[in-house]
Image 1 (spheres, helix red, strand yellow):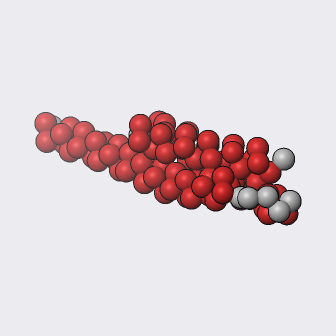
Image 2 (tube, rainbow, N blue to C red; image 1 turned 90 degrees about the vertical axis):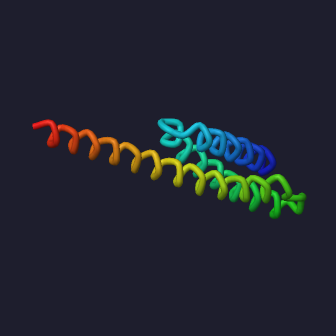
Amino acid sequence: MGKGKATAGLVLGIVGIVFAVLNGYFALLGLPIAIVGLVLSVVGGKALKADNQPSGIATAGLVIGIIAVVFTAIAFVSCGLCVLCAAGVEEGLENALQ
């Protein structure tokens, strides 16, 4: 049971990183996916340790999940800043033309 959760956490972490690299709206989707992957890795790791099984997949999922959360958060914030800057430029141009 824990191995499936750990594997799912690893896969969702990888998907989160891919979405962070794609940026834009994908970062908006990637952040919750990365968080779910992180949670699944933690839960799967605890289940694997309780069964005295190796938890390497869970550890890898945890590391990739943390990286995915950080990357998607950075992409989400930077994309939001770009939108705000573009809106400010548009408003400045409207004021200059009037």
